Amino acid sequence: MSLDWIRPDWDAPAAVHALATTRSGGISLGAYAGLNLAAHVGDDPEAVVANRALLRLPPFHVPAEPLWLQQEHGIRVRVAEQAPAGPVADACIARSPGRVCAVLTADCLPVLLCADDASVIGAVHAGWRGLAAGVIEACVAAMAIEPARMLAWLGPAIGPNAFEVGADVRDIFCRHDGAAEQAFVAHGQGKWLCDLYRLARQRLAGLGLQRVSGGSWCTYEDAQRFYSYRRDGITGRMASCIWLE
Image (cartoon, rainbow, N blue to C red; front, side, top):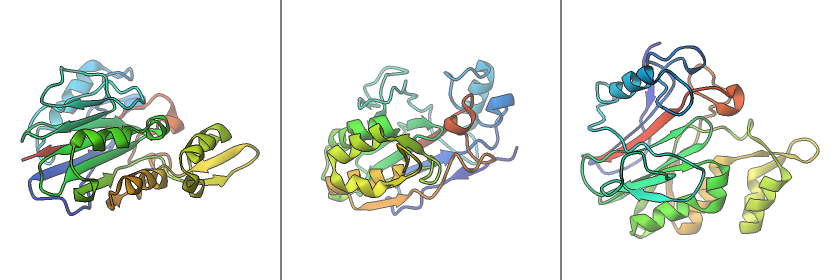
């Protein structure tokens, strides 16, 4: 399987580097076929190690081992320069060159953040639970700069035509902000199609962060390119990485 990856389409400073992997490439087999980068999903551990090693090589050129988080759909943020290996968190930030922030996803929304002067970067794992709980807000607060000076990129996630949720999920978001109604479309009795991308954009705009790009994929609908937990159940994970040169 040939390599395929995504470079963010944003106006980040030259010192900010970022990418998102797809399932293409790698040596994992079966349900994990391709470039699975998650060690917690049941894949052969040796395959995961080999796949992660590929990130250090062309065409990725990731300069160091990423800070791999133990994600729990919460709002905890870690500082890469201070965190132990494998910290429990759903977001991380860094201010030093060569520190790689990363999140793993397979339908949840990866959000990459940077300051327009390249002073700080961040990576966020935003499934609906974390998004509702405020994980984006927590990461922006930890970065400690004015949101107006920040850029955001929304990576591959389940799209608005595939993410069906119950009324309980819709109610959680709408209680927080009435404008969230715009992100839900009725889809049968008590069911709604949810637009994670729109919800994330609303949260970012609410913080004053206006320079937002990305958000045009659907991991569920493109089985050849992306892993999708909702589609397949047992599957791999992709990584969205960001670092400073």
